[in-house]
Image (tube, rainbow, N blue to C red):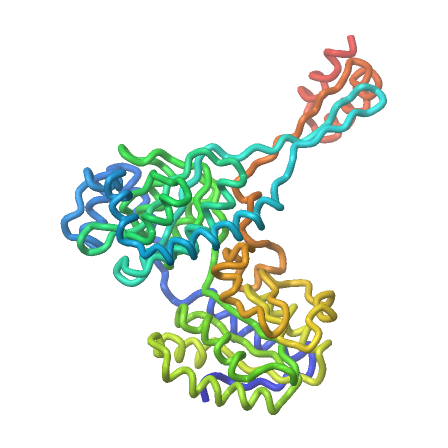
Length: 434
């Protein structure tokens, strides 16, 4: 059987599911000490440390002088990309940009009758660093992640964007990555990967200037570096392994559901693919379709382990119960593969992204529709949201009070300060009452 079967009767059953899924949070790879050493080394030695780590893990001939990708290399990459591929990338970028334009927030002000002006000023951060995984030996970089991270930063108004990605064994970066960056107007690109790239973006080196926010997915070393450096630099989120949950009724197509589950299972052995359904016959049909489709996948071994370890087909009595299960899981991706998804939407409280109906599979959002695919995982959709324009903005409160405000309320403010034992705060106000 590709994945486990669970019969769910009520909330009391979810405790065992939660305990099982919690194993994805700690895969037994304690890399904190190693990553701390990498961060310290990069902070002390800068470019030479980046080159040394790069030679050890990516390109045996990498030197400090070669960290920065030159303009002529980017220009050369443009000649290697089929025109039809560039057209697709441009269309996807336009969709992503149009969606994120709707997220922009304006500064605002309000004036009270006593002349007090209060407000909030919204500004982009000055500089952003984007991490783009290289994929298999640098051959399959996550181009979609570059689009999904760079475009919201640009919409926010960020002026300086630096991209880091591990080089291929010959020292080059994948031409599609370079061409995509060029299409986006990004020219600052560096050959650096893993935890050392995150450290370089945080503290800076002789070649790479430090940034204010780091975004982009990565392996356990990248994720650990981001976690350890949170507070020194802003980060997008601490992302875990990918996951999908599908809520389906008898109108769903078993072959489609199996394909959708496998679309996440092929990501990572720790990925999770869950089907929650009210139809026992559909559950069995999906199980059979998974076994059939799995054998034809290039990444079958990864998907097989994901299905066996962290995936399930859950049957329950009705759609209300199914919605309760989904909210308890709080999945990264949720597909509502039911006859009337809009009638179900109000029951869903916790999900990173929601795909409506039988014709909106998860990859539509991953690549092309427009909403961001950088989403909360491991149940954190209960309290966090997708990467957005706001990830790259900061807000400053504006307080402009007139003399009459301080005169009227100064004694009250001083009293509040003294309730906290902060005498200097109280006297700061009282100086203006004399």
